[in-house]
Length: 278
Image 1: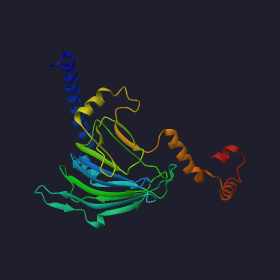
Image 2: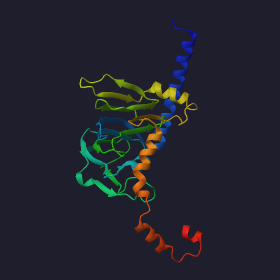
Image 3: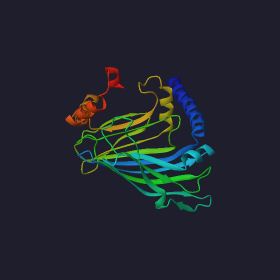
Image 4: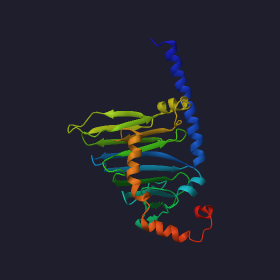
């Protein structure tokens, strides 16, 4: 028999679920689009290399969405990632599929000089959809292959705004046996799955309305805020991440004789330390 406490908790969840629905509706209208579906599958090797096929569908909800999202952009570093568009299309109201032509899928160089990064030469993959209007569905299938940022380690993280999560979102990870995968998640349903016969580990997480409701109700309790998130990593701690970053950045941070000579040249006419700094 259901107790009064259980009834109270169930009522609270219903209230929070209704609040979540109101927020989702308002946010979708403000952004001009809705992520109808997004699914990713991660296949991770012991070396830290992994493949990442992704399928994504957006719905355009307003004229602002038409203006801002008739083309999709994805930034990546070719030093460690290859991105390939398997197919992209938008259907007509009659159900006819209009494919994105190859000449409407372009790669552009991206300026990364404004921020310090271990990676250089960033690029942006741009997909320009045809005949986009309010109500259009923009579909894309991608496949990415990633090399590890830190040799021998794997790390992957996603955050989602609980006020505008995808209607259907899930990620599945499979890793080779013996990898010390650590998982952090908040506001998403799912967890570890049964191991495969060969010993590979499996995890799956997804967006769930009840979990979103709980997230909204506990937004003040989480140090990172109410963002839905999931992360996988082979690092044991943030200290280990910091050490790996330091080791990787050592070469870039080293002042070589060439750099010293260049610095002397550009500051040779300075008359004060302030002029040198500016």
